[in-house]
Image (cartoon, rainbow, N blue to C red; front, top):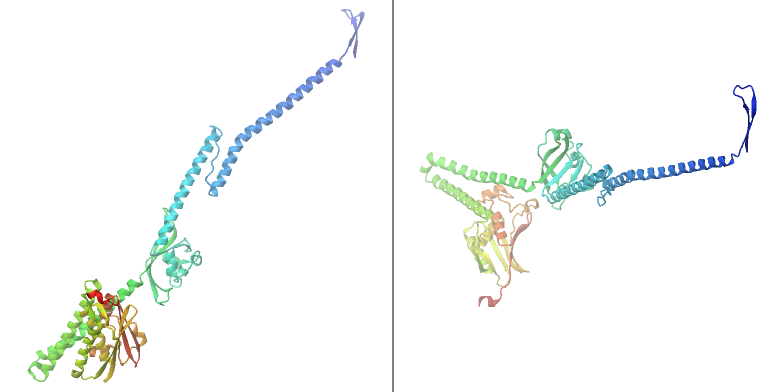
Length: 469
């Protein structure tokens, strides 16, 4: 309860007129105030909760697209372009998400294009017949194709990261700066990785990798196997040299004898015939050489056609040997030809004239290099789908180092003796080409001071009697 007592005075304030007593019950008012306070606090809490919920919703609507874009960026960095960022609206975040998706598509297209170009480049490098090596700006190998690995006899793991100077084994003569300043081609000789033991000759062309700014970012070396070209060039030079030498020798001799004749030797009845004979012999020698060269030229160009016919090979060989038997009486050197032929008649399809020329060449050599009174053994036998003709002499033999070269043009084991006996050095080369054109093979076996044996093998199919009926 609330009580108030107040005196009532006159207007002048001098006299007390009475007393005012006021009594009030405030409990209900306190209850009203308490109720109002509770309502206010409750409303505030509800407003705060609503504000937090709204703030969370607004924050989530902002952070969720950003989080999704972050996750998509991580997936793109890992190469996954399959998913897209969800677009939740057309506001700025929606536009950003749409732009992000377009960016992902562009990156995917670019990546696919780069991968396609890389695969195309790898395919080109793999199928190139030339070796390719690419380096970075420090000269370290970053790319090498299959052909380069084969030519250099290295593996991909051994080559990648290695200095190109070390890889090519030129680090003692060259520096990387020298290659960059003067990237000219060079010839290198490297051991072959096959069983032949021959060396490979590689021509290497260098070129720099430049950016648009001119900065040198690496070096490319392209390797060409020029072993065969160098071999052919060397053979060509040797061939020209040999032809020049072989023609110069008889021409010089002829000039000397003709000069002597022109200076009066023709008047001497004893000297003149000898000088003329030497001149004619040298002329015949040059004609034989030129004819042999023409024959080889026609064979090389494919213009020499074989005139094939079925013949009895036994009779043809006997025909050739009979002529050499007849020559024994006219030769100062005596020799005996022993024949060991199969009893079966061997019918083969050959060019008779060319085959006789081959046998003549080998028989002439056998007679030339056999000792006086020597025995030349000629065997004719039949093997599986082949016939083999062998001619053995008892001559000086051929050194092992020369055995693989005797079928080369102008090659002679004993050059002085061969020229003295009138050989051109082309007989065995022509024989090899003729036998090759017949689909056969020719080779020799020899031991020094024990004689030599030449073998001719030709394809052979036995014919049936009813073929000719």
